Image: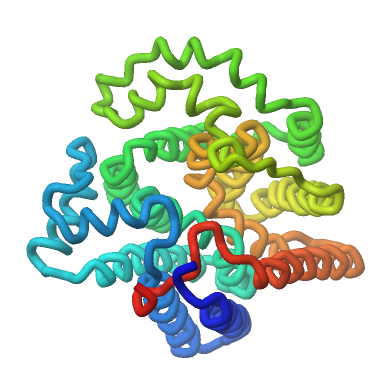
Length: 381
């Protein structure tokens, strides 16, 4: 094993505690200066701690090669990513770890811009961002650069700056072609406003439960022949065309993480119950929050679609990646629920305590396990 698990846990737990403290400060402070200081601390520490990791996640080494060699792994169809890479590597002559710090900075800066629009949610949103999205941020590096521009787009959208919103959405798929999926979801939700037609949130909960209990990931095999007949050449999506041409490999159980790693991942009854309660809480009360604060429309529907995608795709990596374009808004939605939706005090306390305990338990139980991608920082190299 490269890296020291104890050091890794100390550093990450310290960051989590700081995110909780700063989130509380942002949620409760009446002074703009205190909020700005808390946000600055979050941005600096997250950027450094995440940026100074070494060889963690399947995409790390390829991105390391791109930051250190002008001929490795360039994707010509994604010009904005190429431009960022060229500036970092060839113009600024930034060391590879500086590039990873910049990538982490983009994500946390864009996320805090959204948090500033919902400051009361920060005490939930910041630690939940770390607990639920940081592994994906480490694993899917280039995608999360695109996610950053998606967060920028949403920030401009709620400020009603249409030109900048469109520009950032264009940037999304010019960093990662699969961002076209996020762009389509963004446009569809913004135009159709589906919450105007759903009268009761229980209907959405029932749809989720139906997929959860009745859907089997093996059903995806019935649709691979249709995918393999698609031609995405007109979009300039060479990488995505490769996935589509091999749909039987990437969109079925053959492409699942457990299959690729030769292990069987099976959820316990307790973890299933926790997941169901957590998702039903988000789905039900999240829609009520949208009715009160329309700014939550895109975060809510992104989160709902992501939850369905994770159910449909199981642990199939490629489908999971689609879900991560959308699930990054979940911490904002969950945080906003407690400050937006009128709720019985006992119910609010019970749900809050349940969620805090389950997230805390999952994190503590993970401290004794060596992460699949290792626990190294650049000083362990």
